[in-house]
Image (cartoon, rainbow, N blue to C red; front, top):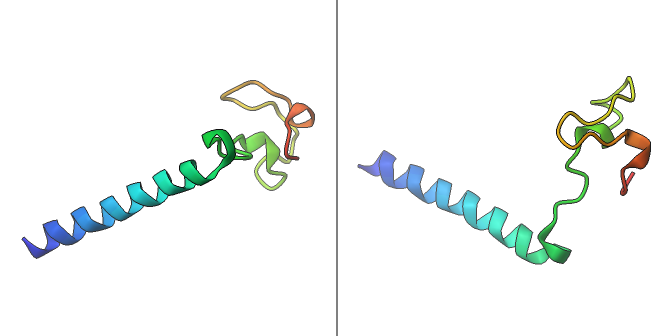
Length: 61
């Protein structure tokens, strides 16, 4: 029972932290969520597999 309560508390803390981050950000958007914006993850300058943007067309670069 202790493990269940500890797990539930940690999950709640994580959800609350994400909620606070979204609330504190302008328009509730995370900046730089595309992997194509990270030069360490996209060494070949490929477009994002999720949104299709090329790395040079992404804002916040």
